[in-house]
Amino acid sequence: MNSKTTRRSFILGSIAAATVVSTKTLTQQGNSSQSKSKIAIPQSMPERPLGNTKISLPIFGLGGAGQTPLSKAGQEKEAIALVERALALGVRYYDTAADYGPSEEYMGKILPEYRKEIFLNSKTAARDRDGAWRNLERSLKRLNTDYLDAWQLHHVSFESELDEIFGSNGAIKALEEAKEQNIVKFLGITGHHEPDIIAEGLRRYPFDTTLISLNAADVHHPRPFGPTVLPVAQANNVGVIAMKVPAYGRLFKPGILDNMQQAMGYTLSLSGVHCCIIAAENPEQLESNVKVAQAFQPLDETEMKAIEQLTINAGNDGAFFRKWT
Image 1 (spheres, rainbow, N blue to C red):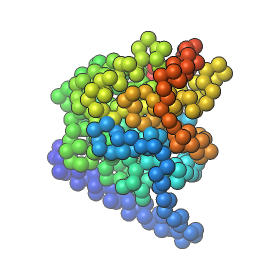
Image 2: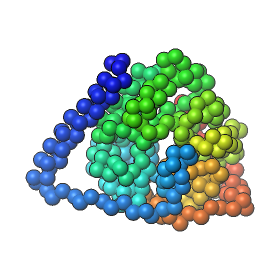
Image 3: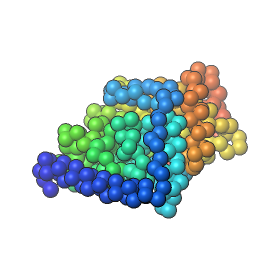
């Protein structure tokens, strides 16, 4: 399918067909049980503009992978309950990816009704144009939407990947075409392996967003993301979303950090960070994280240094994800 117009028409037609099926299913379910009323999304957290996007978002968003039912097969009921609670708590940023198991499909069962009120981000791990397009088509169908607020290149780790992405038939072609056709609004790049690669990606292309690993132990790593990527992102007004904030809870082991207030407070106080995403195992944990975000106040230099001192011996607990490519 080479024509841009044909491709867009194909996607929109497929989404429309999927919506009809979804509507029929909901109608059938409604015959046996009363349908839920729409959740009102409150403005409950501090917000920041996301780089040059002109979009203001809460400083906390929901991650769609990791220690969460959103990425686990057979946990649809738990996943939907988690997203419903997130909406009720004021979460408007939802992060997922083509490679996050059933995450997109689960989100697609509830988020379409709130589509204009939320910011929905997905990713592609394909490095070629056609592979990226196939990922996007599947993501849109599974999410039951005809557009993404942001579409990002997933876990870019090596210079050879950048060369392929920006090659004559690279994935950047698909990202640009999708943006031209208003199928995606903003483009981004993500990584948790080598900060130099993400910084180079931001120099090669005017991305709107970047999703990078930033936690209180990062400063002790020989190749830290903060000092390497944040200055480049700030110079280009790129929206920065932080991930791996508590390192899957490993920073809460005895002798490191005491709580999420320290972990999230540190990351959100780094200059140039606009928001963070954290997964949740259940609605109760999610609510606890949102409360931390609601109470957030930027930490001063003394407080930041004190937290860095606590993580000085975090070692692999703060950077276990570096081996992922």
